[in-house]
Amino acid sequence: MKKILYAMLISAAVLATSCSSDNEEIATGDGFGNVQFTVAASGEVDAVTRAQVELPTTAIPNSDLFALHITGTYNDDMGNPQNYDRTWATVGVFDSPKMRSGNYTAAITYGTLTAEGENAACFSGTQNFTIFARRTVTANITATLQNAAFKVVFTDWFKKYYTNAQITLRTTSGSTFTFSPSSTSVIFVKPGTDLFLKGTATKSQTGTAVEFPEAKIGTTVARTLHTVTVDASKAGSGALVIDLNDTFTEVPEKVIELNPAA
Image (tube, rainbow, N blue to C red; front, side, top):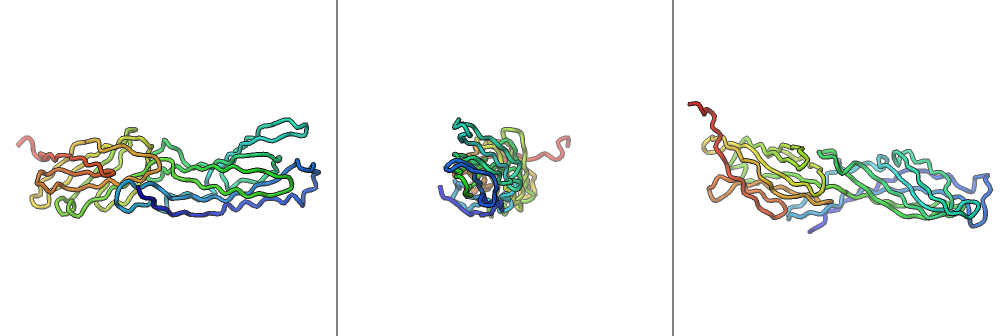
């Protein structure tokens, strides 16, 4: 599998308040510090096919839109261990509060694994960091794709053999997405979901309308952009040849009877 990588490094412009300007008394070695975050949203995905693929830049969320969750442990004034657990709706509203010296983990998330669609990318990432008294530390967090994605491409031979093609893909959850040879959409779906394909088209030479009954063509994999390649059989069988991750599925054509009562 080859990797296609592009990273949109976006500074989550969180300005931490300097402890040196704080009038609060801080015990030596124990006390309060701050953290600021730099968030990178990475478009790195696995490409199972030999075709060059990459996530569209429009699918990469802005750093300020990530939800932020910080957990950790620290000792209170009596030396007793305490747990820290706070959530911010987005990185953009993180106010860099004073935090006790201790060890923490920041988690950022965007989207959900259950959503499916063109705007349903799901990203997440985590980073451990340590707060020191009277210091501001920086934590760099990289979020990567967590769900799966696919796009549909049509070969030149298919476009020569058929016209007016409409190909529909259905997921296990029941979501459906329709593509034509001019489509460029990338669809995000749950990892481990089965994909089913059906469609209609017109034969270029005869003008005969045909349909392709639904057939399972494969299963999606997390953090992977799949390319569904739609081709026409060169053996004269009138079948669709579907290539998903170098796994081929043949879908036979069926002539659409336009006037069955005649």
